[in-house]
Figure 1: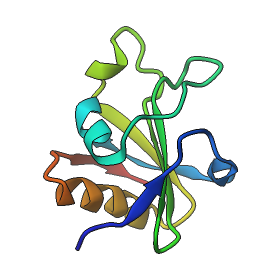
Figure 2 (figure 1 turned 90 degrees about the vertical axis):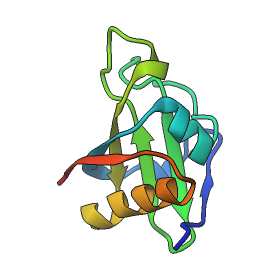
Figure 3 (figure 1 turned 120 degrees about the vertical axis):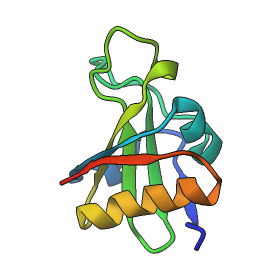
Length: 111
């Protein structure tokens, strides 16, 4: 099953009220391939790359690097995931979308 989604080109209020759902191991390049260009970094520089994604079934997800200091964002492999829905569901949406485009991804944890 292919996950259908849209990505936002800038920060969206949909992210308000989301919670940490887990993390994945994948490359910045893989995320670019699947979700396109990330939105701008946070003002406090704790997040340098972030994607806001809305799946057609209503599940909203953000993927972001968090405090990955000391290395270029292009070298980050540990990515955090936030959402509003069941954590396993949120993480599964991302994994399914990435695997559908033949991108390597490994679930690090689910909360």
